Image (cartoon, rainbow, N blue to C red):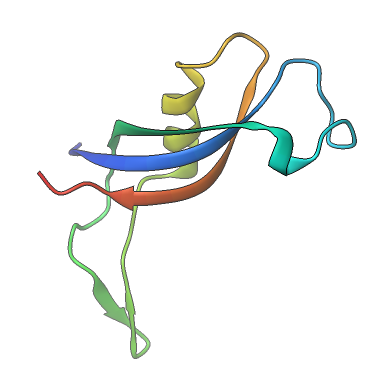
Length: 85
């Protein structure tokens, strides 16, 4: 399976914090480049008259980010763009 680089901006939800315990604007934000497995075609495809581009499975995205966080923290993805080599 091919891997591609993505620049991902995400917020970090600290360990033990529930959805009613924070304001999104108060969370730490990071932007980093991750190399993630992507089983889909690189090029956009036309589906039903609309051009559609594919990306990695969200599970792969969250797993890549999770490796950089302290135990119990959770990412919230805000933006994800492919990185051209």
